[in-house]
Image 1 (cartoon, rainbow over the protein chains, first blue to last red):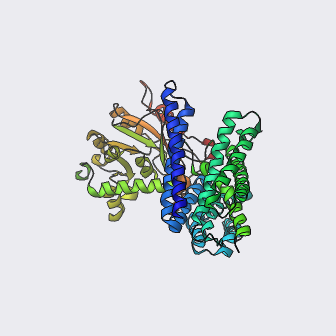
Image 2 (tube, rainbow over the protein chains, first blue to last red):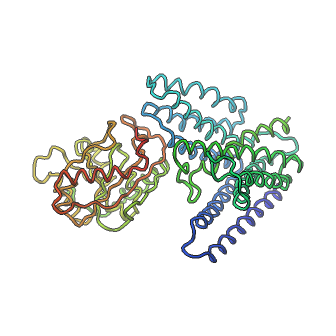
Image 3 (tube, rainbow over the protein chains, first blue to last red):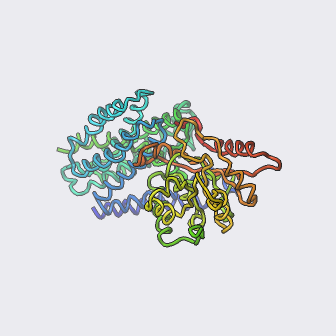
Length: 311
Length: 220
C-alpha cells in the first residue's frame, strides 16, 4: 500500500511540476502583458497544486480526513448552488436544514457505513419532507420551481458528493485497507479527463458538441479525452482491484458520466445567466466548477464497484 | 463626549474584528469587488445599502486590518444603546459609534458626532437609508446626512458599497444565518457637484449605489 501511494504521489508531483515548468516557459516567452489564457492557465495549475496538497493531507488522515474534506466540499458546493437559485424569505428554515441537518447527517451515515439509510435518506426522506415544510409555510409562489431547485441542490452537492468518501465503506475482497486508492483512482481519472478533453479540444476541436449549452465542448475533445482517460485508467489499474481492461472500462463510464455532469452544470449556469458557480478558487470559479464532473461520476462508480466487486 | 475619544483598537476590539471577519468569510465567502475605487489609506465614508445587522461586519471584513482599525460603523442608539450589554457589544467590541434619532442637545446631534470622528482622522461606515430596509424596494431614499457630511468635509471620499445577498443570508426576524455567497461591490467615489442641491445629490448618490448591484433582477 505504501508503495502504491508513493508511486501515485510522485507521479502527480511530476505531472504538476511539468505543467508548472511549461507554463513558466510559455509565460517567459510570450509578449507582455500576458494573455488572459496564459494567466488563467497559471492560476489553474496553482489551484491544482493546492487541491493535490489538500487531498494528500486528507489521504494521510484516512477515513476521518476524507469524510471531513468531502463534507466541507459539499458545504461549499451547496452554498454556491443555493446562492444561484431564486429562493424566498419563507424558505429560510428549509435552507438552514439543508446546511445544518442534511449535510452532517448524510456524512454521519457515511462515517458509520449505514448503507441502507445512506442511499435513501436524501432521495426519499428529504425529497418528501422538504416540500412539506415549504407547504406548511403557506407560500405557494413559484412553489414547484423553488422545491425543485432545493432538491436538486441537495442531490447534487450533498448526495452525489457523499458517494466519494462512501467508497471507503465498501468491502472488496482482497483489497482490504486500500479503499483510499479507489478515491484516488476516481478523482485522477475524472479530473484528468476534464483536462485531457480541454487539451484535445484546443488542439483538434472543430465540431461543436452542443453549441447551445457549452460552446467550448467539441466532439474531437470528447472522443480524444475519453480515449486518453480510458488509457489512463488502464495504466492506473495497479492501484485498483480491477484488471487493466476492467479499469479502462470503468474509467470510460466514469468519464462519460463526468462529461454529462459538466454539460448539465453548464445548462444550469446558462439558465441562471452566470459564467461560474462562484468565486472560491482563483482561476477556477467556484467549487461546483471543479466538481461538476466528479459529482455525476461518483454515484455510478460507487455502484459499479459495489455491484461487481463486493460480496 | 468622553466616549468619543477614539483610540486605536483595544485588544478586545482586535480579537472581535479578526474573529468576526473570519466568521463572515466562513459563512458567506465574502469577497470585495473593487469597481471604480481601490483599497486605500485615505480617509473615507463608506455608504452602503442596509438590510441586516450583519451588513457592516461584511463590509469591514473586506477592508485591510489597518483600515478596519480606524473605520467605525454608525449605529442607532435607539437599538444599540438600549441595554448595557448591547452598548458593550456595539461600542467596546465592534467599536461602532452610536447616534440618536431623537437628540436633544447640540452635543448629541448626529452630524456633529460623525464630524468629530472624521476630525480624529478616522473613516466611517454609514447607511444613508437610515434604517434597515425590510420592504420590497431595493434601496430606500437617502436621508440628508451624507450631503451634510460631504459639505462639511469635502476632502473625505464618499465610496458607495453595494452589499449583495445579505437580505437572503439573514432575512427579517431571523437570527440564524443561511450560508450564501456574498460580495461587496465598491464603486467610484461620489462628490457634491458645484451648485448641486441637497435632494439632487442624494438621489444621484442613491442611483450610483443601486447601479453597483451586479445582479439587479434577482433581488427578492
